[in-house]
Image (cartoon, rainbow, N blue to C red; front, side, top):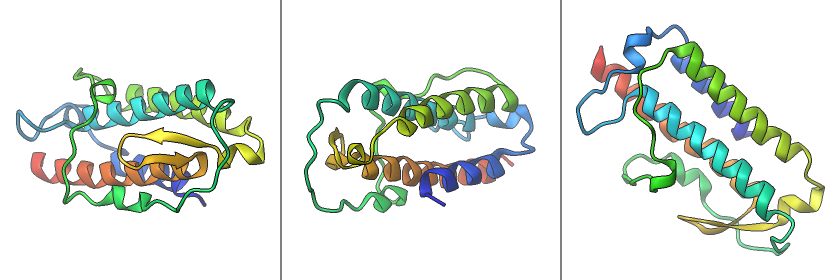
Length: 160
């Protein structure tokens, strides 16, 4: 199973059964709540779907070195999310946010499903790795999600 799908399954296991109140609680004023983490992940999928749709036809097919996208899981280096993927702070419930994430992931999966084999070798810009093939981008999304699963585990410990 790809890291892209594996991470999403892990995410659902991590938030399953959480009280709605807990997903909206911030461990500290300057830290994200679980809702904010999930909103950020939703925005990543939306951004990727839009970028893939808009840029895939003109993106070059070229060979680039394998990038260490797995390093995205390492939380020892803190990063500030770019403004366009910063989460919206709002009060919600687990079922609503799960439905929103499922909807956006379905949109992204539909875009990916329409690709031809050569499209996975097309190269698109990335804010950290400079450029990634579409295949590397998809793996990055999974590893990035795993990073935030660890963050959710930390949040759950802090608020309990």
